[in-house]
Image (cartoon, rainbow, N blue to C red; front, side):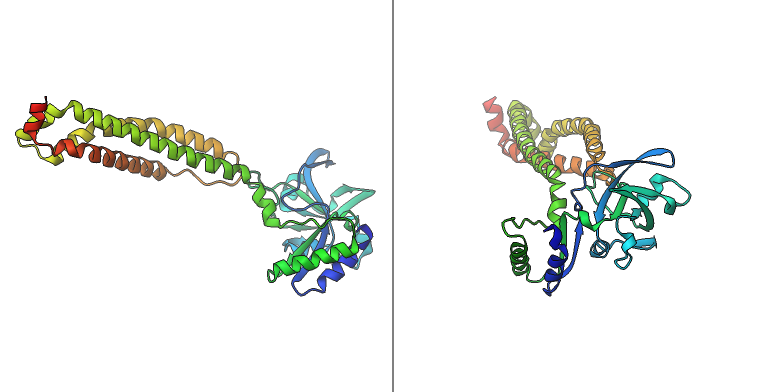
Length: 315
């Protein structure tokens, strides 16, 4: 396909549901590693991607100043580069247009600056990037579709590919799937935490149920005496819940700092993250308390409602 890129582009653009086609050395979501180059006496690392002029328009990269690559200027090929804002900040020179980026066979001058955009996982911040006009290195075809008749359009693209490059498989993926794969570990960890939390809650409920049953059984005589002296079911339930609530408060005070620490450490893996709000902990404590109280109340109701005479006779 190396000598048939323009043919592929022209053929695909004839189909109404293919909006734009551009070639690049890699694709967003798969840019790994950083280039290293001496700039103004300092060795600086930055990402790079080699593209053709249509790449800028296809991804709607926003030009802040300068100009983009020109198809009309043959001198632009392999000699011009765009920097993102992070690169300009990283290079820290008075005039970024005097910077030359090393490219295969020579050096490329900066002709424009584009607005920062995320091209990797949100685990990392926006890294400095150089976008080089070098269409010959375009190993990937970036194709923008209208979103209509996707299945039929993919079939047509596949047929066009097979016609131009028979014997070579037509392999494709959607850009959103590339970015989705960057967060698979986070999704898996989220599912694991959910299941372990449900198991922990179930075990805790069984424990609370057992403790409340034991406390109720061991205080049958006391409950009977209190009822004879005029205590109501509500008073008995409050008595039986009191010890459980104390235990929950102690557990809450232990769990909060540990949870906050664990969540803070996990969020450190992201360059962009939310703040941990205190209301989450309070809400969790209130919900846990309500569940525990409901469990104890359901278990203790039969003891609280028992005839005190039967309770004393049982003792």
